[in-house]
Amino acid sequence: AMTISNGEGNGQIVPGFGFMPNNMLGETDVNPHGAAGWPRGVRLSSMMAPSLAADGGGAWFALGSGGSNRIRSVIFLMLQRLLVRGAPLAAAVAAPRLHVEEGHLDFEPGFDEAEAARLTALFADHRAWPEKSLFFGGCHAVARGADGTPVAAGDARRAGHGEVIAGA
Image 1 (cartoon, rainbow, N blue to C red):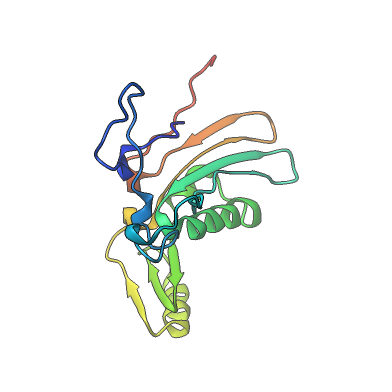
Image 2 (image 1 turned 120 degrees about the horizontal axis):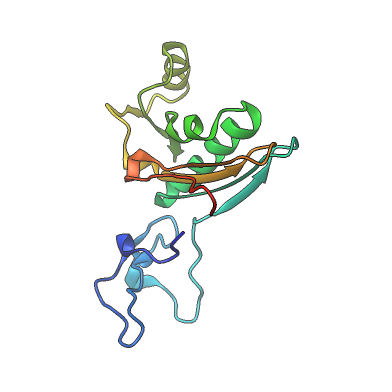
């Protein structure tokens, strides 16, 4: 996995180091006062939450996602689907997502009619997205099944790909 991304780059390469610093000061979830309002000497927090989880039956999962303030929703939904519902890794990654922020609900297609009706009844302020979207993050994950079998899944929302390479 890469820990440096040009997706949030500032447009400048650090001379002699070959990487681009991020532009996270513009992310409202970590800096609600804007880039010009950041106090000197204060470390920038982040919503990034690479996560490890075990299901109690011998399976292990490692996952992470981009998505700004939607990261917490993606990680929660993934863990709920993997650990509570027992969904296969690829199905959990591909499943529809939702995000609630300040009383507003955004949700993707794919929830059954009853689920969608319950969601919209709970949140009068909502948006039903017409298709899956990178807005909801891009969760990429790997797992080791209880039997030791490796599994990988990439999120199509962000052009992800997961592959297990035999013998690696």
